[in-house]
Picture (tube, rainbow, N blue to C red):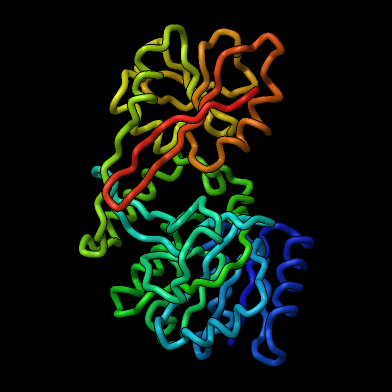
Length: 353
């Protein structure tokens, strides 16, 4: 086996990743190659594949991965189950799940990939061993030699975000199976986000959505989309956005805000949109510019609604709370999502300040 580590985050990150590799892997089971990120991720991956070749199986790691004891043994246990294998991921230093593989779903009229069990504690979920999936975390991709000989490059159409997903789609069209193993690693989720070109490295949905739609149209076989989900809002959230007097500040311009804008009149002057990402400031949503949180006068708002899922508490503590004046006494709410196989219902939770 050839192991390729993509080094995007500098010496400290690569050393931690390598240390975890040697601490958890049997001796003499791999050859190790390290490639410094140049340009963007797909370019680096293609350089790596050209260097190591396709005669042996290849494991690709991002340098924000920490391997955990037993990963190699369980990979060998399920080796024959798929042509491309991934692992389940936890957020760093937590027991909170980042993903257990990704599945294609249609949410209302949009096809997306959904991270299985994201936000749950690993103690809450049932063990599955191995399952087929539509996509995997791109920072741990084990690809067998046979499939690499059929699909031996990563499309630059992925633009530092979706190259691995396109690779999975191309492999499936060559008959490959994609699978995820129920063994947890730690994943920082920041490797590709370190690119200095913000159009390539930003976490912003605003920069991703047009790229993603083009990829879906070109590479996704519609028969792969098995699950269809509708979005709804709770009575409490509906009441909050319709009855509240005064101005409402919406933090975040991602998928939840986009959906809520189909249900409520976000074009109204009552609503202002803000972000903590410099690259989003000045973009237009609902015919109005997005404000940066550092430029706001918070006392002008009757309430604040934080829309990004799973990270609202972090946004509030680290980005929003330090900027609130002592005289600010309006409520701050976070969006929460209650999901089943047919519906995502958005509700609210008040945050204390």
